[in-house]
Length: 169
Image (cartoon, rainbow, N blue to C red):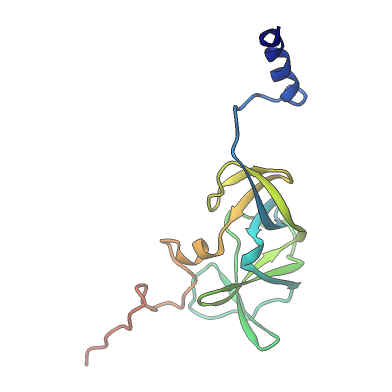
């Protein structure tokens, strides 16, 4: 008799006719969620130092095009970089400040939604859209942003391998 109820239980588990995708891995991760340009992004909460009000960064000459500029906030220099995969539709309202091994990195944000334990269905991979208990989000990893092959934001001419450049005379 229980075998006959299995198909009915599967139908009830589909939540209103959603397609059955089979068993999904679940993990609970502390995240900061923020919106920018109609996209919701998630960062691991441990990577976030704080969220501050938007201030226009001072532009830097001859830098990577992703570098929007820098700003000074309470004695620290924060490099503001554009968020990959986002086309802002309105001016940013906040800056998500993250501490990295190279210093402070700021990401422009429209609104910050929450800092909470978020249930994640699937694997967290950088720049991947992931289904969560808060809806679909694009996961960002600050370390990956800095170490991406196309580069962390660096001044033009800076060596990529961490070694000083030799100057021949």
